[in-house]
Length: 262
Image (cartoon, rainbow, N blue to C red; front, side, top):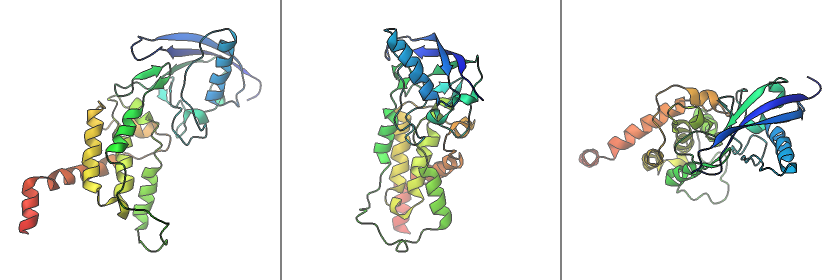
C-alpha cells in the first residue's frame, strides 16, 4: 500500500469516572499506512492541540508490545483486528482509506474510566499483591543444573509468564472475567519448585481478591484466549480451577485431621 489514508475516528471522550461520556467524531487525514495505531492517535492529537482542543487521553509506554499498557477496543475488538498483537504494534495498513474506526476504553466494572480511553487497572495490581510472589530467597543466580525442572513444566511456566497484564481478556469477555489473567499468574509460579510453598494459599488469595474486585465469572466463551496478544491458553484456567479445588479441600479442618491421623 502506498500513499496516505483519510479516516474518520469515533472516539469515546469522558472527563472522569463520574462523567457520562460520549462518542466524538474526528477526521484523521494524511495517515501513512506504515504508522502504528498509536502514532496515528499522536497525529490526531497534534491537530487537536493546534486548534486549542483537549487531546485524546490514552495509555501507552513501551510501544513495543511488551508492557501491556496501550489497550483500547478498536471496532469492537480489544487491541484491534490483528490477532496476537497489542494496540501499539497494530499498523494502519490493516485499515482501508475512508474507513470509520470506533475507539473505546476497556469496559468493565473493575476498570473505572480515568479519562477518555484510560482506565484504572490497579485491580490487577491488587490481585498480584494478594499472592503473586514467592517466599523463597532468590539470592545469587543458582547453577542451571542445581534444581531439575521437567521440560514440560518449564515450558508451560514460560507460556504463562508471557502474560503482560494488558486486560484484553477482561475487555473481550462478556462477563468481564479476569480468569485468564489470574490463571496465568497462578500457574507460572505453581509450575515451578520455587512456587510450591505458597501454592495453595496463592490460588485461594488471588481468586478471592479477583472476586472482591468485581470481575465476572468465567462461562467458557473463550473470547479471552482469542483476544490475548500473547496467546495465553485457556488451559491455564482449567489448571487454576484444579489447584483451587485442591487448596479448598486441603484447607478444611477435617482434611487436616485426616492428614494427622494418617
